[in-house]
Image (cartoon, rainbow, N blue to C red; front, side, top):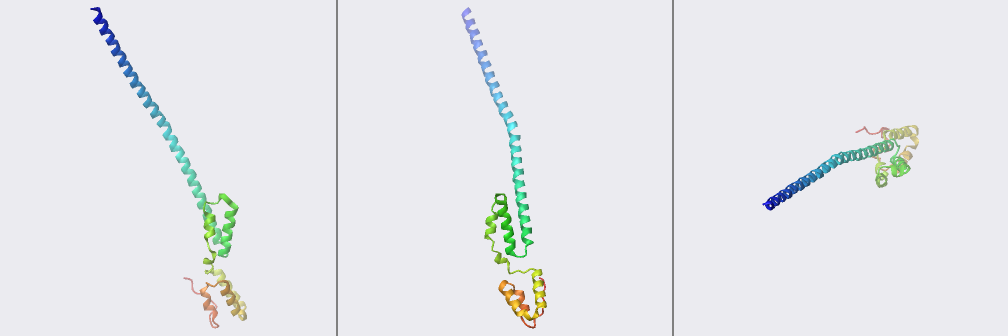
Length: 172
């Protein structure tokens, strides 16, 4: 009768060993999950920090580009003519080279300053009227030359007649 007891005892030992093995496997799975979540707990904040840094760099670059464009526009507006404004803008972007905002050179190359020469500033209109009043004997020649230089200036038609008053049209 010792044999069945020994067999039962051996069977119990095997069963206990199997349960121990099962527990070890569960511990191992639990450890793997812990490692995964620990890694995720470290990686996620690092990814968020990296994304924040990249976003900050992008926003800084965009702000710098916008400020450059604004300054370039101010420089162009302060010019006395569209040709001069375009020349200034081109000069500035060429000096900056690759530091200038992407695409600005190509954009400037597409601009035709002739489209904007039809609009004379109030200062140039005043200058023409002053010149006409100082040299009335050369009135026709001055107006002819002005028309040749600025063919789109329609407002000088009021000055071309002999009896026409020496004044620009009312601002609109």
